[in-house]
Image (cartoon, rainbow, N blue to C red; front, top):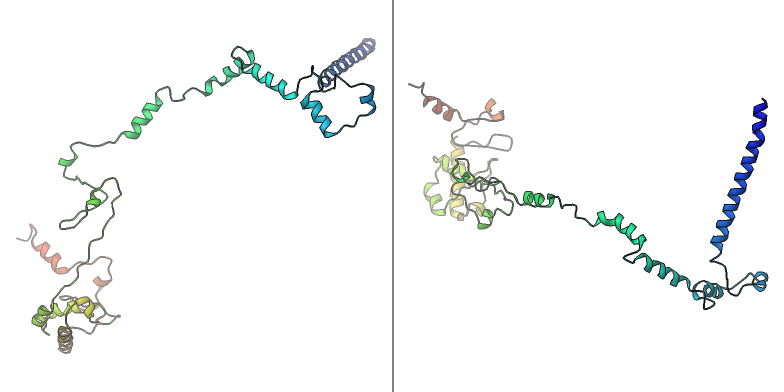
Length: 271
């Protein structure tokens, strides 16, 4: 306990000395900072008595210079900036040493050349033309008898797929007048739609006389039962197929039995 009591006064003395030292340091800094902002040339008792000044007087005191010995504020800044930008100044050396790494090329390790080579590289096989599965344009399909333009062969542009044209029945007036007969059901079936409606002349491009003859022959074939009376609710008439509702008609993919039987009969086990 005695030792603790003896150390208490010593601690108090140390605290007081530290506080006095810090106060003196703070006062010295404040006076040093306030010195350049004071009017050193002409201030005195008059300035202390009259502390208010106009805006013009303030600008003249800060920027204009009151006496010959005092320099303007911006002139001081210019001198500091010039001394900083000198080649031999220490301040400039420290800043330039920090900024040296920013001006270096980050691709100086050879990566720039590697990237250019990878961008220009195009993999190809010089013997691909001799292969069986060779295709000049894999994104397009050229069938035999298909017409194409020169722009379709330009590999710089993406290919435009052209759907194949559907088969359209073409006939002349002379052929209609010669072949139109109620017994020629295969020929007459080309003039009716899936709903059993006769095609218009704007599509068949035949004369009115030939159109009337076709209509009469279709009517006669239906009267004799050679052609059915088809509507929207029934199957479309196809020559050689039955008009009865069969399970094959509702399947996802149906095949003609005659072609299947023919292919089976032509097999190696047919003998």
